[in-house]
Structures are given as C-alpha cells and as structure tokens.
Length: 492
Length: 97
Image 1 (cartoon, each protein chain N blue to C red):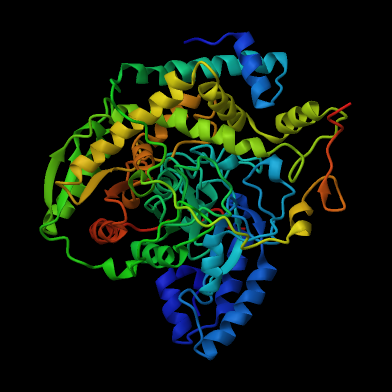
Image 2: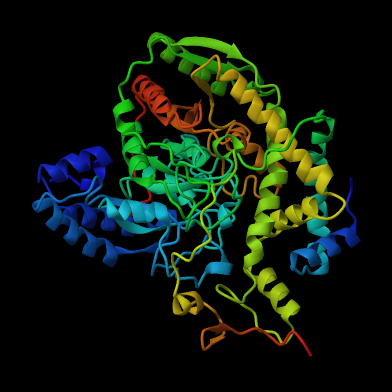
C-alpha cells in the first residue's frame, strides 16, 4: 500500500468510507511523517497518543456508519487555538506552560465531525509576524527551496507551521488564523491553498486574541476542494462570540466546479506597485486569461485608498493587541516572575515573557491609544478604515470577485528581513485591506517563479460569498496545474 | 510626530514593560520609523467620515442577550493555571499597606 500521507483530504475521506484503509493506518502514516519531518520545526507539540486513540474511535464509527463529515481525518492546529488539556502557547514564552481547561469552538466543531488532532503548529509569537521567525520556539523552515541555492527559506507567517506542514504532507489540512494575511501569505509561500473567511464566519471563542476586529480562523489545505470541506466543519453560529454570524452555512463543496460564465472579475489598478517584479505581473495576467477563458468578464477597477491600508492596519492591529495582551500579567496563567511589588511583578513578567516584535506592537498600540494621540492616530485610522471598506462595497456593485497577486514576492531567506520591521510589514500589502473590510479571500498556488518557488493568486469576494471564491479558485487551480514539492529533502 | 527617550519610557510604563538602556535606544529607532510611516494617514481627508470599529455584518452592532447566568461553576478550572492560588482565589503581592 502506498504511503497514506500522499493522499489529500477528499481522497482520504473516500478511502475511509470505502474501507480501503482504516483511520488508524492513516494516522500512523502521518505520525511517522511528523516525526521524520522534525527538521522543519513545524510542530510545537505532537499529540500522537491522542491521535491514535481518536483514530480507534473513528474506526468504530466508520464501521457502524455513524461517521461525521471529517471522520478519521488527521489535522494540524495552529497553536493559537485553545485545545483542552493540550499545551497551547501562541508560540510565546508567556504561555509556554499554559494548558487550557477549555476547547476553542472551531476545534470543538472539527472534533465533533470526527477530525483528529495530530499536533499543535508553530507560528509567529501571538500571530505577529510574516515569516514565523518571531516564535519563541524558533523559526519554521519552508519545505520549498530555490533551484539556485540551498539556503533555508521562511514559510511565511504567521501561520508558518500550518503552511509548512500542509506543503510537506504532514496532516490532511491545518487550521490557521488570519489578522492581516497570516493564512494567505504563508499559503502563497508554500504552494498551498489558504482561505480567510468573512469576518464572523468562524467563531473566535477560544482563539488567543491578537486584534479582535480583524482576527479570523481559516483552513490551509493542498487543494481547493479540501479547503471547502474543512471550512464547512469549522463554521458555526456561536453564542459565545458576539461577532459570530448567524447566516446560513452553505455546503461550500457544492461550489467546486460551478460555472463562472458571465461573472465579473475586477482588477484593481492600485495593486500594481512601482517596482513590482515582472514575474508577479505575468502570473496575474495569466490568471486573468484563465478566468476569461472560462467565460468570466475582466473589468478594470479602482480601490483608491489601497495605499493607506497598511499604515491603517499598523495602527489598528497594535492598538487592539496592546489591549488584548494586557491580560498577561502573571496573575492568572502563563509565565510569572515573583516580586514583592505588584507593579514590578507585572513588568518583570511581561518583559521576560514577550518577544521583541510583540513588545514593539504593544508599545505602538499603547502610544496610539494614549491620551493626546488617540484622535490623531487611532480614530483617524478607524476613519480611513471606513474609506477602505467603502472602496470595496462600491466595486462589489459591479464585480463578483477581485483578482490580485497574494504577495509581492516569493518566499525569502531566513533572517533576510527580520531586522527591518517595515520591510517585513510590506509582505502583507495585498492581504491587509481584506481584513480591514472584513471580506473573504483565498490564496491559490498559481505558478513557480524562476527560482522554482511558489507564487499565489488572491481572490477576494463579497461578504459571505466564500462559495463564489471557491468556484473561481477551482478554475485557477485547474488551469495552473500546480505540482507539490517533489524532493522531500527534510526527511530523516 | 517624533518620539524621544522620555516618551518611550512613559509608553513602556503604561505598557507595563521595562527596557534596559540599550533596548530603549533600539526601540526608539523602531518606533520612530513606524510612526513616521503611519503618519502618512494625515494626508487623507476624513472630514465627515465616521469610524469603523468592526466590520461585523456591516457594523450593525453586536448582538445582545439577556443578562442571565447560563454557565459557570468552574472555579477549579479557572485557577488551575495560576502561578499562585489559594482556596479558589488568585494570590498577588500585597497592594495596600
């Protein structure tokens, strides 16, 4: 029998239902793969015992035909989701001893459909970063390497463990979170499919908060169909999250293969950047042709406030972060430094527990919210956010989706940008506006660049129109005929 | 707007984070670079524009529910991760003399 990690999620689902193999066999192959891929540093916590026990339960359910929609399917979970009884760190020293007494709604939904936890995945500390290099547990290595040299590349971030593990076939899919591009940018860097759903589609309850008005959970998978399957089981209307939507949850998989004939695709003029590489422009053009050949109409559009999205984001996200991260004070959970003075205890705990990027963002956030600066920065940014949102509402009267590159470049080398915060922030230039406007968007692998590294295209949709996005994404996927990594150099 | 060392110390104090002297120099440079960069928002005309605090369902506001107890009794779960707790309470250093 071939190694079962070569299957994708929907193939494994079929194999399990046909009794071609058991969930235990599927899970054991994935555990082997996880253990032999440790050089990628994708997992913070491996949970093989939980996985085997769950697989045995799933196999009984499959025999009795009492199976859930993801019965017996092993998945990786970003370490931002609280998992009951399993270490949950947010990749921070601050939470390096935190074992949640509760389960996040999204993971609870997955387990109730029979999915199986393989382990907890590395990410940038508190999901703040675009390269997975800010993790207390060290950087994740991208399974992709350039044709020209053998240096280690970043897997993108903040969901770098999620993207790397899926690209390396460790798990049939992974959960990520996306506050400014943290699912789509790593998906683009690793040749995987990553979707950020509409704000409110997935409950945020039990997800460690970064910027609450922007955070959203989403799936990273090896193809578009797998993505749609995983999303369906993640969503629910959750009374524990006041921003959880009560909109009907469609069977997203039905959108795969749906015709896009006559639908309209917007190409935003403002996403052409000065000095953007020809390779990015070429694949963008190719994407337009693919959609046109499938009967869609291509329309030039304008999103005039695009250039303000990143600075706007770098006020709002740190402001919300500084407030959310105030809870880490060494009193109730997490890292704690003893002192006889309470203020000294707070300061010592936070200075030791947080890494540099997290401290930077807390400082920025505190500054823009502080007396005298609130109006000039925080309130101003929220007004600019209104303008950005309005740009999108206007164009979505004329077009059904927007097509853009996912990232301004392919994956870069470890340490290449880690000393320059702004150059790191610029990675998210195409993804950030989507979070500000609360829209759904996907990154689909579209091609390899001249170095043999993946580049993704992004499709942005109207609120709650993930189905339309999936229909378009499937066409890009079929046209691109993208092939995953051939040489698994990291295996031991 | 440019920050100086005193501003950074004040913000650090509000943030309950302490920095060593050499760290202050470094974070001062980083913060000024970031503040300079976000300052470009000043050029956007936002007269008569109202702020968006959340994009949730077009900002119609959050749902509210009746203020009744529907869950609870997790005292042990809640204190289980506390570095110091006693009889179901969190322990902190003495705050009032």
